[in-house]
Amino acid sequence: MQFTIVPVTDYHQNCSIVYDEIKKVGVIVDPGGDVDRIAAEVAELGITVEAIWLTHGHLDHAGGAEAAKKQFKVQIIGPHEADKMLLDNIETVAADYSMSGMFNAVPDRWLNDGDTLSIADNEFEVRHCPGHAPGHVVFINHANKFILMGDVLFKGSIGRTDLPGGNHQQLLHSIATKIMTLDDDYTFLSGHTPLSSIGEERTGNPFLR
Image (cartoon, rainbow, N blue to C red):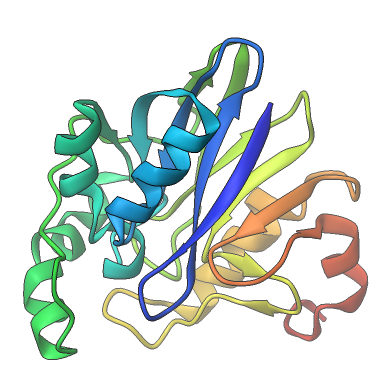
């Protein structure tokens, strides 16, 4: 299993293309925008996109989901249904920030805690981690000890909770019960910062002390 990062939107969000390098199939995770750039990277990799996965409904993660769905003719999977309000208001929020090319997203499948998704033979566990957003989920591949984290936990920080639906104590509870229960050698890709590991954040993240 491999991944490549395509920074998208003015927020430099880490949209990722996660794929099986042998079978040449993959998914696009959090296409917040700049779908033409994402499509160009997919073509460069020579893979077939099988789905779009969303960690949560904020516009920098989901604003390009509908355009990507049309581009690749695939389904939008996730997040948890608690983020429906965010997904229904992407266009309104984008207009408030003078951002264009973003559209409300309608998932073909909502996700729940404990669901599983796969890329070829690579299985991911879904964990519902509210706090940054009510319906936020993370995707965990235990075989490779790799997490697609979204905006729950960052290298040296945690997700902001001052946006609609945010809850600081809920976020800390999600991190404690859904993330920090994993071994130190799990690596994760967050929505906006470089790669880190559970062990690195356990010892060095000031928000977790």
